[in-house]
Amino acid sequence: MNPQIPQLTPAQAADRTEAVLLDVREAAELAEGRIAGSTHIPLGQLPARAFELDRGRPVITVCRSGGRSSRAAQFLAQQGYDVANLAGGMTAWTAEGRPTA
Image (cartoon, rainbow, N blue to C red):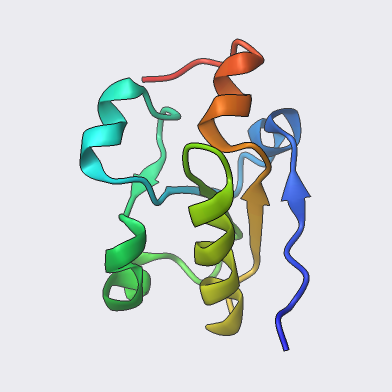
């Protein structure tokens, strides 16, 4: 059974200052801009590196459009993390004019 993952708008994600923003895109995609302060673990490395995330903080997963981050969120939820997904990914974030690093 797959848990229901909350889908956050960019505004909701930006307001969750206590959360870890986890960017699961490939390294080459980060050149297009990333959310300042986000943690980068490519989706393919997540099973081996999930231990790097603080279990005491909620996690918001981010990718380009929301597909890979949804898979990452499902995986993390199954590992017991408090997780949400950025609906629309970086495409939605930048469309709202939100800052990138």
